[in-house]
Length: 227
Ligand SMILES: Nc1ncnc2c1ncn2[C@@H]1O[C@H](COP(=O)(O)OP(=O)(O)O)[C@@H](O)[C@H]1O
Ligand SMILES: [Mg+2]
Image (cartoon, protein in one colour):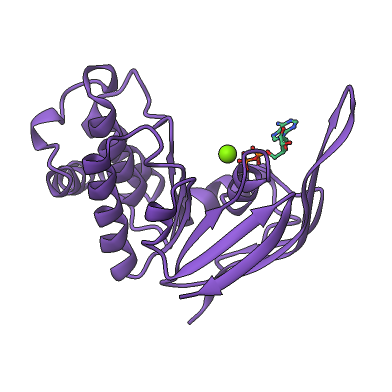
């Protein structure tokens, strides 16, 4: 299977008033198409930094990052944004739905980056909303939804364009266990359709959904096992 994510000796430091903070201290990682990996580790260990770099939201201080076979090092911000929009679907703990757009419009958005025409975007977004049982909320605004509904809408948006990589940073952190289980089912479904899923969680029960389990400690990979 092709490598969809390659990190080679990735470091990321932040210059702060108090000195330099090294969030990632030499992370090397290969994720293949169709893989399902969880990432666990204490707060502040670098999990979100790692996800932001994989998702091309941030660049490393040094080291190499290849996403879908493309070396991101010398890519412009614009080229990086195109790669991100075509390849990656994000799910965050705090949903990040656009508040001024309806649920349907939020889910349609990533399809626009793919150049899908409007009528088809609407059809596809409706299909996906029905898969997450949100048909009846399509014309609502995010503020009118419960936490679980927002997260389902965020996942619908993340998977709408069929990205090769789904990145989820504590996606079940704010959900009750029933909604959390539904979210995991959705990830399982997109993973079985061929997407690589990378899931950051605090919860060992959530991590158990993944066959590959990675632990980060102090900006380094401390463990990486297949179960
Ligand atoms: N934008 C930033 N500016 C400065 N320091 C940051 C920034 N983002 C993260 N850090 C620091 O990097 C380290 C790793 O953070 P993070 O990746 O968010 O950890 P985790 O997601 O595992 O809790 C922490 O010490 C954090 O304070
Ligand atoms: Mg984090």
